[in-house]
Length: 374
Image (cartoon, rainbow, N blue to C red):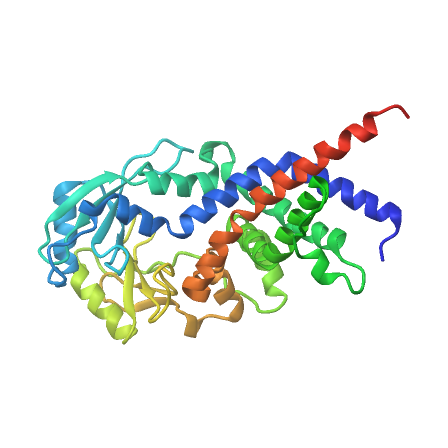
């Protein structure tokens, strides 16, 4: 049992942090619900970009890259392999970006059955992706938007924990404290809604807030995870001693073949060609049987001249700490637990709105009493 002074202090902090930070938390919650299914929504809104001529997978990676380069000569940063949600090749081009501004990325969609370009678009400003950016940076990328979202994650975590302590019922009153009663006053009804919504969404909100903070502030979370399982340094491996000048590079098709030989049975999900700062190919794999929202789980880096594996960060080669850090995004959107997990996260995204509105109503209803003569 908390003393009256401690409870009043906790209630004061819970109320004012909720009122001040609540609008941002509500916005992040609602946009988070949207982006749980943003790929499905994007495909539904843009059927011409995601409808191949046939189900065949006839085009090689080299053919995909040639078609994309003909449509857009900008360097290729990422290549997404077809899957059930986006059944086409998606090539992301890195255009020049002003220092400190959001990366300028354009995508080229290539039909896997015939190699034809289905369309191009500004990746960051497409509707579904813009909602994704709103969730991740509040569209304030140049102005510490991502860090503000991380701070909102801390606010949500604090509100969830403090709300749990303030809600804790007396013995024998558990079900009464997590249900909404009928035939009660408006204030009692709003309080019931606030308590019930907070309790039933608590576990998911805790998971969302903890993983959200970890995604935004990985260097803060890494030492904490290391107390249980030491993660390895997060780096971008490269070939430190390249072969003599003039040594031919392997073709993209040869790279995919080496990647499949290194991880037989795994499905390639994404590829990142070498860049000016990383001279290796990065190949990510899609987990078999996982929810399509789990875009990838694990990667290897390949020598572009020999195809040898330079670094392995697939689940079998990672520590438990590494695996948790790599899994944070899929925990955050519920995809780790399949479609049911995504539905839970989708529903939990509306909980901050219910809690904010009900909390505001209680504050407004009770506030005049304190302002009266006294």
